[in-house]
Figure (spheres, helix red, strand yellow):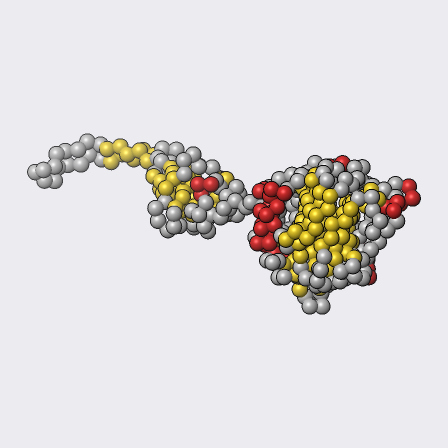
Length: 417
């Protein structure tokens, strides 16, 4: 409420002062106070192209209460030369290609009738380029399992693990595009950890995760005694113990497109403890019918090598086939390999560490109506794997023209050869 104050008439006191009549002052009920920003604005989020940053305005004081606005700014070095980003005035900002290798901050301006004031956040770290995974560069995958991130748009975890001492389970994601080994070690509490689920990363319609619900059959990923993640060539690896029949199986709904009966490519990174005995099965995609017969695609260690091919199970044993065998010969026990097999209607070409090992020409029957998909064992859970596996990918296309690029990408990550 306004208050009137009337002063009496003032007589002149000097030659320069005339008589002044009554003066009325009106004092408002509110005194305006200029704004201040008491805490600087902040930025949260991942500093990588394609990610979203979020700005939180700093606290303000002033009378009347000030209104805050935000502006996102960009700099080449993070300390000077800041310039406003056109149209970027919201609380969130999606990093674009123009931000790559730059630095960002947010400027807050607080305003009321008494004035305005600005404050800036700390600079972000240098903005990283958008992640481009193997499956971004080479599309068409129908099944993809790895302990590294394979696709930029994949937002799921790598694996789900079970802690042995209390059977608690937890998803383990990625950190810097690799398995988050710190999260795994923290969850372990010094206990062994086993893989319950190996998540599928291709995103293909109908694709399915690899799972193992039986605790005794779950492959191992963390050793409690040594308190360490299991590794192969300094990269995380899933360990399959033959004596415990460790293996996974999947039940995708895209059976007819997992492995096309005309073209497909399979790449895997593995390390077998021995090739002669036991007969380790790396993978098996089968059409099981009554009596255990049917077409099957399998990779199995035998006779100091790895045999990959299509087989008619009615023939009874792996050496008698209605299809053919492409052999990775001279394989060494306890050595990490990258093996790629490409089937282009008539030929099955097999490559070990980017060198062709075998070429077979035939016209085999692929499992066109498959109903079993195993990693680490055959379709009857037999001949389990004895060794480590880090990556397994199926493309439902002939990747002959891209094989070199695919293998370079994989080898750059795992340093196999």
